[in-house]
Image (cartoon, rainbow, N blue to C red):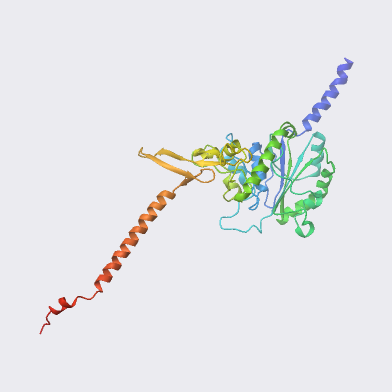
Length: 377
C-alpha cells in the first residue's frame, strides 16, 4: 500500500510532463499582412507544411524544391492553406521584388517538454499559424554562420555579411544551444517591428522531436540528394528537383506557390530521383542515363519523351508527341512547321504570280504586230 502511494504521484508527474511536451510540429508566423488568430489552428499534412516553408525560402535566384500535394488532401483545401500561410505570389506583370518583405524561417529541433515551455514563454502573443503531425528538419541549407542577433537582422547596412539575398534559414538544436531561446526572447520585439514595417516576415517552427530523431537518416539522405541535384542543375540555371506534372498524372503540382514556372534540372543523380521529381516523366516518357550504362563514374538521368495515342470525342485515335524537361508539354513543332511552311509557300507563290502578271502587262508589243494596226480616221 505504501509502495502504491509512493508510485502514484510519481506516475502522475511523468504523465503531466508528457502531456506538456509538444505532440507535433508547430509553426508561428509574424507577417506584415493582417493575421486572423484562432484558438484551433489547422493541422496540415507534413508535405504541405514543408512546401509552405520552402516556398517562403524560395526566390527567383534560388528556387527551392517544393514537392507535391498529398493525395489525402483535397485540392481546394490545399489551395486554401497555401493562400493563407504561403508567401503571396507575385503579380503577373510585376517583375520587381523590391517591395516584397524578406523571409526568415527559424527552426528549433530537440524540443522536449522543458524546452517547449521555455520557447513558448519566449514568444508571447505570437499567433500559432498551423501544426503538422510529424514535420522534421527541412531539406534546406542554413543560410548564416553568424550569431543569432546579426543573422536575423535584414538591414544590409548593419549585417551585410550575415544576410544574403531575400531569404534566411536558421536551424538550432536547443539541447546543444540553450542560449538561443534567450536570444529569441530578447530579439522578439525587433522581429515584430520588422514585420509591422513590411521589411521582413518571420516564421518560427518547433520541429517534431520524434520525427526528427527517427527519420534522421532519411533527412540526411534527402539533404544529400537535394544538394547533389542542385549542383547538377546549375548548368540549366535551376536549384530545384521539382517539376509540375500535367496531362496523364494524378499528382497535383505546386505551380501556384512561386507564381512563376519552375525549371527542371538537366540531370538527375539516379533514375529514382528522376522519376520522383518528374512524376515518371508525367507518364509520357522514361528516365534514361544520358551517358549510357557503361559510364559508371558520371551519371545523368533525364526524361526521354515519347508519344501517346488518345481517342478524341468522335472515337478516332490521335497521336500526340511530348517534350519538355519532364515531358509535360505537348510537342507541336511538326504541325507548326508544316502549317507555317505551307502558308509561306502559298504566300510566296501568290506574290510571284501577281508580280509575273504585272511584268507581262508592262512589256511592249513587238513591231510586227504594231505595224498591222491601222489608225482610225
